[in-house]
Figure 1 (cartoon, rainbow over the protein chains, first blue to last red):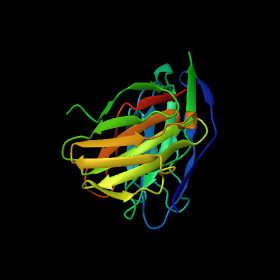
Figure 2: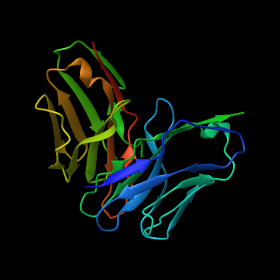
Figure 3: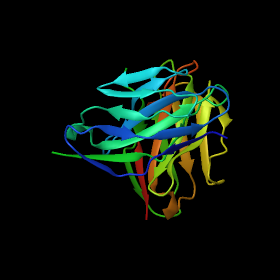
Length: 112
Length: 114
């Protein structure tokens, strides 16, 4: 079956530091890949997505590239802000099963 | 559009009581999902509907849980009888047709069973 593995958190960074959150997946066929963000007390919001190999999703300074050869979709940001503090979820969906499969989430804490 | 609307936002109930969570998906979306989020198990898919028909309910924990979607604009998740281990945040999400389309989440219902 499908699965998503994320790096354990929390990740604690200083403001303006570089961020990488690793995500690898297992799926049959060619899944679509997503990063969602969850702020305290809120639902999940789509941050970015990629639907085919070598696609790069980007939004609000965050980027992730769909790497089929390494089955990865790592999230990066060049300079984090305190307001980026949240939990980040990597997820996938495939043609046969449209429901999203989520990773366990990575909590990011950015200190001023 | 107002987005996915869930009610109530918070629910506190006593063990053994029936609990009903409600969801209004985004108009025009034909897939609806119920997820449960806990610290121990993360985000778990409970059930999903396509065009109001349940497609996969393998994540429903046990017979105490049931979900319905009587029309395209409304779904319920019912727990009867409720137990303390059902305490969690329950999210509803909807998505339109098409490969690669994302799901849009509601704000969630925080359920506490005492």
